[in-house]
Image 1 (tube, one colour):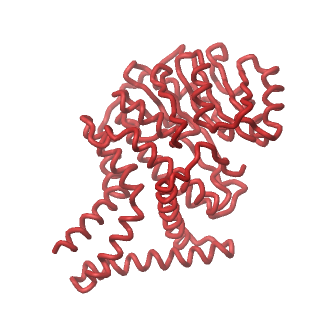
Image 2 (spheres, helix red, strand yellow):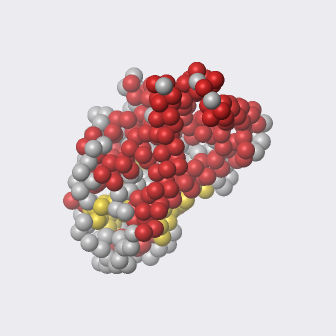
Image 3 (spheres, rainbow, N blue to C red):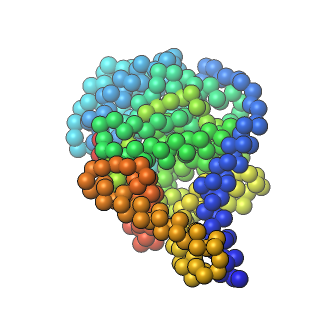
Length: 383
């Protein structure tokens, strides 16, 4: 009886993260009626940390120049983290062309967090916008993002990030499909004012709410800044019409490394926000547990479920059905792996394969976190 209870409890935790919570939060958001108000006249500072971004940095700055926003209310501050390619030269040339662009060349590489901390101190405007060198904003993205700051209790707003798989291998399509579910959840959380984790390529917070990102311990910078706003009791919204685009990783291996790094830094980030686990805002705590914390420990849940299910195989039809469902998923994932070696993608096999790779990356991230092998300095995903 104890093993059966433990099995069912672990299964409920898994189903909660990927089924029950998404359904519940989306239904709650549908019932929420928010006033359609817009903020105007807010000055903004776009902060970008760049390291060896010669392939994309010119396009990024030119993209900002095309935005539908009053340039008198805009400053863009780019910090080059001791780039060793042509990034610095390109930035200095662009600074001569655009008066709203400020460039800071750092002579020692310290990592994205340290650069962002410095740029935030140099920013002089009401709202801080965080973005990446490879992100491309739609023309109205900035305006639509800022429009959400229509009252003082709104501390942060995330835009909608669309992942593109153009000119990359078909394996990356699975990341896009996973991202569609994530976007639905983020939209719902944002409508309720409890967005758990902004999209790193496009989000904004009020300048006075900026908390310096830890640089002694590697954290996930966008996640840290999002949680810091929520932990101060402010709302964090989602602007569905503030659209930006980024390419997904070139292949599953690149995606694995990225997820492993994020897993390690996410565990570290959690240590700074234990108060959110049992917050007076019960919905916020439930969202934090369901959307993030329980997912981070999903590999252990999967292992426990399979082990217990094997032991309980003779305990009834339900356990038999659940066991064979698991075996089928893992078999399909193995086939998906073999097909990926041949550059063949069949969605029936590639989705389970992507799911397993994601959880293996989480396990590797846990190991990296426990060994304290995660650094504040890392290589970006190849462009």
